[in-house]
Structure formats: structure tokens, C-alpha cells
Image (cartoon, rainbow over all chains, first blue to last red; front, side, top):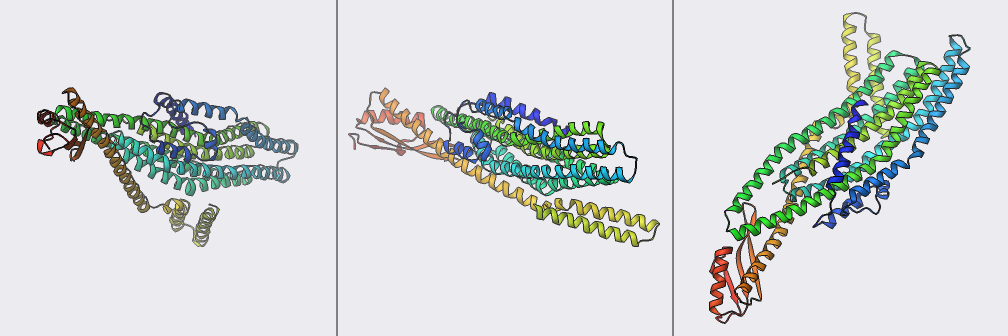
Length: 364
Length: 165
């Protein structure tokens, strides 16, 4: 999961950009902005209630709302600790019962019962978190279907005609691929990974652990490749189409230059007014879009992250108390949370990257 | 999703069963080693089958769809900007003409400028309708200013209400 340590960096960059870019649109397109506000899914909509996209301080207020949500997330950590405490209780009981026993059938049976008990707790929480992961992906996909076309339209008006259209097409396609890979490949792989981890712990087979490792590697590699391919595609497309936009602006400017001075001045002043207004609108959409994506992701990321860390810690404690197989099982459950976390993070990161890329497009 | 997962697990189980039976029936030796490789490949294909669900053909169709959607957005945004810029430029020229008339001490009731779209991507004034009670001398003076500064020739300047009518 170390590869996903870039996600916080991405979020911090985006939050900094929000601070710099937040400005009230001079000629805001109320319709576009209210469409984005209305498209925010349930909890994110409640979190950002009262924050308007055309508000000059939307970025700052949004960050405050998200920080408030993080501060009030004690219940999430408590829930994670409850599951971990239940697992630790089983580990302790198993350790107390099994330690005086000789190696053999009875000790093996106690271990097997402990593995089954830990697996029962794990399956229950992982099932609900897989549902949570799919729900977040769907929410992000629905939100992006309103956000991306609006952002694209504003970016086109601000002069980025080719690059905005290309970035929109790329982001929409990659979001579609991520949704498909996430729901049809990663989620089933997480379940299969858990099955392999549980079977490996129950039977003590090294080959099953190796299958689990392979599945984890496949998941992380698939997500890493997808996000890397998206970033590269967006960067290359941005460079190529950005040049074509610059060229188009130069051609128009040079054609305007051949007009009578008064006419040229009026025409270029009108074009500048439209580009400036659209630029401000683009920034407002980008800032509100990033806040929206962060609001959609914050609770699931906190929930999955808290479970990931607590289960990792529980696995480390268990190693000191009982058989390595149970500790490996608890760690495996933590990794399953990490895999769902990586998927949610990848979807959020892709939308962040797309918005930042559309916002920083410099034209003219 | 559970239906899909069930199908997927069944396909892996079926692949594993076929592989296991084939391995059990096959005599030990070189043939079994080859068969083991084939069975491994079969299992990998079964595991990766969800990936083939979104085949490259459908991805390229999706890209074409998104490009078409991007073109629609581009066209709609272009049309919106054209209308916006036409309105701004028309207003600017009308104000300019009224200011010029005022500077020369002439009262002009209104100036209605008609715009044309140039293929290089901008609007330019092509015709104007002016309403006001002007003397022939004032009309000619203002007409000359409009022709020299805005490039609208006299034959596309429509005057109404001046005393020469």
C-alpha cells in the first residue's frame, strides 16, 4: 500500500490550490454552479450545506467543513477498535487455552476454532466495507458525470478548446474503466484474497499464502498502472492539445490585428472579458468540485484507513500472544481494507488530478 | 455484484476441477509437466476473466462516445460564447457610435449594429441602422467617422429620421 502514500500529497496540493484559486466568478453561470451543488451525493451534500460554489470563500469553508468531519470521526475509530478488541479477545482465549497443550490434534483444533472465529468477525466487517467501497465509487461516478462536462464547458470558454475536450474524454473514459475494474476485478479479488488468507490460516498452507500475495500484488499493480496511465495520458494530451490551443489563439489574435484599430480593440476586449469570466467560473467549479470529491471520500477513507491501521496493530500484538497463522489472518484482513481504500483513493485521486489539470491550463 | 462473484468463483472452480482431473489422469513425466503449464494458464484465464468482460473493443467504443460527448460540449460552449461575444461587441459599437455623435454635438436616438462572423473566429460590424433627426452635414460627418473607424461603408449605413429623408 506504500504506493498510495502519494494520495495525501495529491490531496494537500489540491487543498493548497483551492486556497489560491478560490475567487467569486465575476460573470458566474448560476445554472452550471447550482447543477454541481445539487449533484453532490447525500452525506457530502449535508457536509457542504450552506457552501455555495460561487462563494469567494467556498474553498476555505469547504476545507473547514471537511476538517470538522475529520475531527468528529471518533466513532469511526471506536468501531474499528471494537472489531479489533473482539479479535484480540479470541486471540487471548486461544493463547490461554492452547499454551499448556502439547503440539498435536487438540492444540491444532483450538487454533482452527480461533481462526474460524476471527474469520467470522472479519468477513462481517469486510463485506460491509466492500459495499461501502462500491457505494463511494458509484457516488464519485455520478458526481463526475455532472462535474466534468460543466468543467469542460467553462475551460473551453476560457480558451482551452482542444485540451479541455480531450481531458474530459480521457477522465470520463478512465473513470469508466476504473469503475469496471474496481467492481468487476478488484472487489472480487479482495474477496478471493480474504478467502485465500483464511484458508491459508486454517490449513497452514504456504501455497495459499502465496496465492493471497499474488492477488494483493495484482490488485495494487492494476490500480497503480491505471492511475499512472491516466496521469501520463492526461499530461501528454494536455501538452499536445495545449499547444494547439495556443496556436489557435495566436491565429485569432493575428487576424484581429489586421482589423481597424477601433474594431480590433472592441473585439479583443470582448474576447478578453469572456475568457476572464470563464476563467473565474472554471476556478470556482474546480474548487467546489475538489471540495465535493473530498467530501464524498473523507468518511469512507477515514473508516477504511482506521480499520487498516487498527487491524495492522492488532496483528502485531497478536504475533506476541498466539500462533503466527492467526496474526497473519488479522493482518490479511487489514490488507483487504487497504485494498478497498486504495481503490477509493484511486478514484478520488483521478478526479483531483483531472480538476487540477483543467484548472491550471494557461491559455492565450 | 454477488451474482457476478458467484459466476466468477464457479468459473474458477470449474477450471480447477478440469485441471485436477486432467492432472490425475495424466501419467507422470514430460507430458504431465506440459499439462501442468496448460492447466496453470487455464486457471490464470479463469481468474482474469472479469478483465475480459470489458474488452478492448468496448473501451474504444466508449472513448469514441466520450469524444462525441466532448465535441457536443465544445459545440454548445462555442455557440454560447459566440452569442455572448456578439452581444458584448454589438453593445460596445452602439455605445461607441452614440458617444461619437455626442462628441460632434449631434443627438442620435439609437444605433443598431448588425454583426457578421469571420471565419478566423471573431465578430465584426457589417451594417448599422441609425435613428435621429440630423442635418445632412451632421449625417455626412458621422457617416464618415463610422466608415473610417468601424469599417462600415456608407451603403450599409441605414439612416432614418434625419431631415434629408
